[in-house]
Image (cartoon, rainbow, N blue to C red):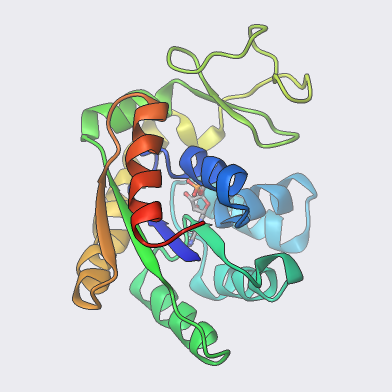
Length: 218
Ligand code: AMP
């Protein structure tokens, strides 16, 4: 199944995408993770992208589209994928459609995660991430077993530079202005399913997997 996870930063798209991958096997394709990896490796693209990311702004469409095109061509993505954080603009959505259509494919469903603004801010400001393996924790809702240390690889956890309060505000503004229009865009195409993303991670996953099973996922 080819899925797009849509929603403001901090609604839990990445966490839920990991669970979908674990249950159904479709890989998560996160443009945020791919960009952070490029920043960590200090590639030319990473050095350039870091400026936009630190300011809470979007990286240019051409850059992310190129990354997604390469990723979706990989053998692991041939039976489906979960796009997390892409598309984030209407031009990105149009390009995604073009590149899938060229291969006779389509997006099966767009899941729109809905969470109150207050909860989004609480989730983002308590988030701690592993710079090594990209695992994500939360100081209150999903603390690591050993304080400050990644459960999976033991690396010291960090607060993403774009999870600082000033940047959170900028990212939410960018979401409202550039990404939220995708809700109407996919609604018109009859592809959108709204999902209540509030509450415990397990409860959200229960609602999400019910939607996916209802669509025939196995
Ligand atoms: P995320 O981890 O999805 O919150 O992404 C972190 C940052 O990476 C965003 O604030 C943007 O600067 C950049 N980014 C991720 N995905 C995209 C995208 N589809 N288009 C443009 N910029 C992106």
